[in-house]
Length: 114
Length: 113
Image (cartoon, rainbow over all chains, first blue to last red; front, side, top):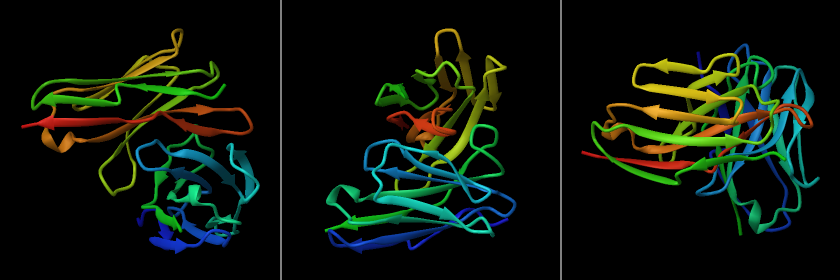
């Protein structure tokens, strides 16, 4: 089975722009979670989606939004980019809700905001 | 609050020694505690997890213990090898505003040959 995939691998944007990151879960997994990992820190939870519904939200501003599609893939959107949004964005998938099922991470998208 | 504290932040051991990483969590309702290993430039990889209905779980050289009363859990690596060198993260599931994994700050483990 293929693991969690994310695109693009790297991205460079300027302040004020908008970005869309994409994630494809492991086949059979219905839940996708998004995390932000700043260098030297642990991943910080942004969203969890399960069966196309938001099932958890972290302490991030409304500039961050996400959605899940009928095939369980997901997109994370960030508007009005700030320098502080520069980070590795990780997607994780699980068969069901996190905590009930194990989460497996994708390789991440490295976002640089200049 | 939602908090997972992890110690130490760095740990250096000789090959063959044991390594112990400790975490505490704040939400008494937490019932799932995974550990992830992240090598430089790679994705976090799940190495072991434990649920609140057990106090200890082992997988070859890796073990995790859980003390629900004290809200502590620990990762134990025995007979360490240079390939164990990485950053290790603990996490706990928090059920405030839906389910979410809250991660500790990470422990950079260095195993010297």
